[in-house]
Image 1 (cartoon, rainbow, N blue to C red):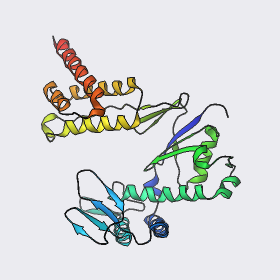
Image 2: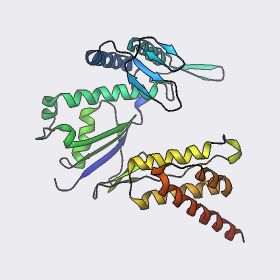
Image 3: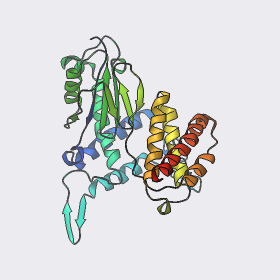
Image 4: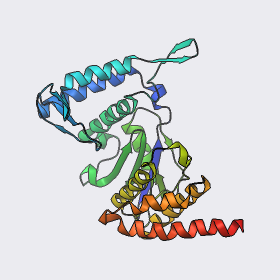
Length: 296
């Protein structure tokens, strides 16, 4: 086909339709795949503010620096979490049919179940050909397929939009809600332009909490998180500037004082974020000056 096609989809009823037993079965299969590749290697997690984990370490080691888990113990914890499907409202207790929404390991269950279906689809070339998706190039080059929990985006220069919709039905056993046909595909906090193939930002309103109801480093951490995310996405300059202005206006609407916003910006000295910080300082002064003139 000429050009590029893409879709975004959301498995809105995933947690209601997938039974805990299926998630547990898929987790056991995934553990077998892990064991075939890494043997009895444990999973180590470092005790630090920044999340770090790796495969390896001493088995069942518990120190102030971190902890090492054997995969069988992680499997037991997952089974226990999937087996607790109760919800209470006052004194009434109900047993859920599907996975608990918002549970400790519900997102992991979604990744395990959907990831298993993706793995089987990618490894079975004969099945792809039978479904009409035989490609002359490797599958990973034929379709850009990204997923976060139950939100999926598919982009391809080989298959049209209708083919990509059919691809979802062939690959997954759960129902997906397909987004509208647009040139710019909004997926999470990104926006993918199917015409220019640029990755921009999907700017959404930010409901800022009051300045008196959050810890002192809240605003600095918020800015660092945004800057780091934009640095990784690398959107066009006008995209992150637009997102920066929107965030400042949302903070102003939540009655944040300019002094606290500027104080958080002056505390950021990371070299990668100098342009973003400099623009934010200038924009911050303009936004709060505009507020003062409006009152006058």
